[in-house]
Length: 370
Image (cartoon, rainbow, N blue to C red; front, side, top):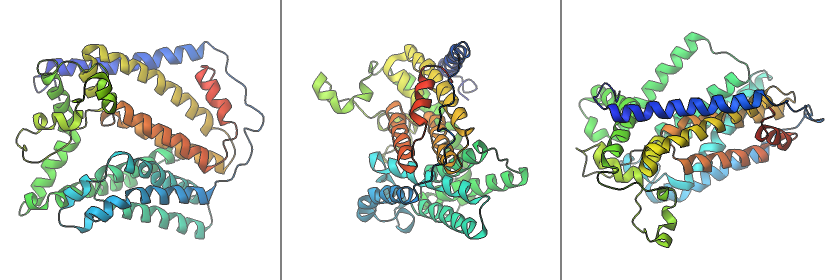
């Protein structure tokens, strides 16, 4: 898209980032192939129960974390100004929700698939209830993350998705995504909902990210010098004599959407935007490091999901699905955002079921022996 838009510089930066990521992944895999694999530790095949009360409690805590915002502005789907209400649901308060609810839904899905009818019904009710709650929040990305977590968990469990079901799910997802777009900007969409939904959906899914990268590369270093890592230390800025370090997403939004100056907005820079804003072309090194980390994550996931253990394997798969999802979201998630979510996923996994063999597997993974 950047190349077709006549932006060779930003296009080359994105391509270089992809190449660096692939290089880091290949290098990490090559090291692992040259080292002897670790042996399966006694007890890896132990039957470990799911701590259902803890899974439910974590989901409840995730909901409670956003209750103050809901009390202040109302439930987004049920108030007149959906956008203003939805804008309050952000920051650290919503991060546990992003982990606990999709994680619980994934466990319910995998636990109910081959279970007796009553258990299947309970699992279906739980998943529908979680989806309904997130719909009330009028959030596109929360629903998208829920659906993606279920799909990834299903595939990691060795299941397959029929083409007709996949096609139907895609249609439903597009309708839901476009519908939420219209509801969140109903005044602008009135009288021309279909065209508005189509244009806004294409902009959000296809065009916003390339425009954000291009805008950041236009503004930095021409208008603002490289931040040299300070965007990740905004709270500590005054200590280093920089109290004016901006939030990149809000700072660059007027350049990404120049015709919407009256409305405060956020254009997620993701890893690409943060890499450029902080280090320019040298930021490509971040993607080599990400490639190494992703290869090791893939090795750990592959090791854990093939182990026996019934319910323990289910929790491992759910946690792996969440980790994979958030890594895939680095187009919108920044470095610190990804780190926070992965820490929450790790904590959720440790609490959802006893971590039999997990510490040893992590050590083997970090020693490149898996």
